[in-house]
Image (spheres, rainbow, N blue to C red):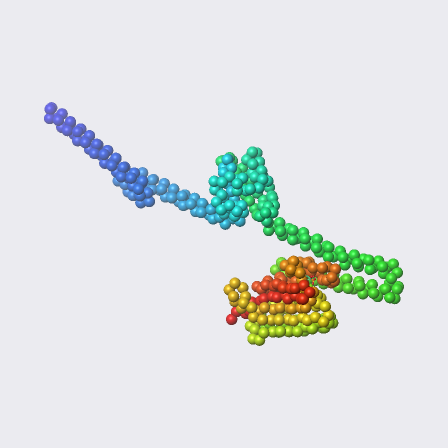
Length: 415
Ligand SMILES: Nc1ncnc2c1ncn2[C@@H]1O[C@H](COP(=O)(O)OP(=O)(O)O)[C@@H](O)[C@H]1O
Ligand SMILES: [Mg+2]
């Protein structure tokens, strides 16, 4: 009996020891696994003895988590690229108006290199825009405001959107300077066109009324008035043609047919076309062309149109007895110093005062409308477009009373 009890006690003891060992081993492996998870989360065993299910579940959880993490990482990268490249400014301000985020465009628009931590008032520096932001904070409603900042030559629009979560606000800033400028140009253009149309139309009306009132029967006045009507109609036709040219060129509808062109042949054919007109005005038209000039890459008829416009002006603004010289010579062109040809139309005419020199290439610009007679002020602006479409540039130099020189440069054909 005693030995039986002894066997039972021993067995129980052995069993207890076995369980204790199992427990200890289990705990040790669990600790090892935990430190693995902590130290090498990317390299977890899935065959942990006795815990296969658990380690598998942890591993698959980890895969899902990693996947979500990388998706959210790439979303973050995409979002920050968008914010960085955006030309509109984006600012996030907290409830106290301190800036938590500002993209590069916002910092550029407000000319503040590091806006973080500054207040909206410090960065925006315009009371109307700041008021719009304040109103948005107070009412929790979206506000929008546009202002012109003459000191910075900017026209900005600000949209303040309340941020419901952080009780701060999101500010979107758009630079509408260019849009505004285009709107002004369009408005000016329409008012210029209508103004330019009004004068010849009023004079046509007056002439026809005079004819109706009896001048038609007058053998002397009748033909004279008809002649003036014809001149006015010609001017209107020329203006319509120039407007059409300008609008086609500006909207990129005119396709240049570029081909190698010898500078000498270009100035010769332009001079031939204008010779008669110059002679009739009592002017001498001559050519001066450097030898062995390289060919330019040009649309012959368009470039000839530029030269004709310039010669036409020279004829118009030079008194009889004067000289007009067409020149072509080598020019170093562009930043790279690659080759080009410089064309020039030189006259001994009335000249252009310095303050007008920068403006004569604008549409409709005429220095002295009463003196220039016929002309719409579109010729030089058309010429400028054509030269620039060739990758060239055009400018003028002049001295009042002595004459003017109009230059333009065109790149040569690359060999
Ligand atoms: N060679 C020149 N000499 C003096 N003034 C000139 C000359 N060329 C152009 N201008 C000035 O520039 C203005 C604009 O020229 P342009 O655009 O050709 O228009 P338009 O010939 O129809 O007047 C002219 O009205 C004139 O005031
Ligand atoms: Mg002209």
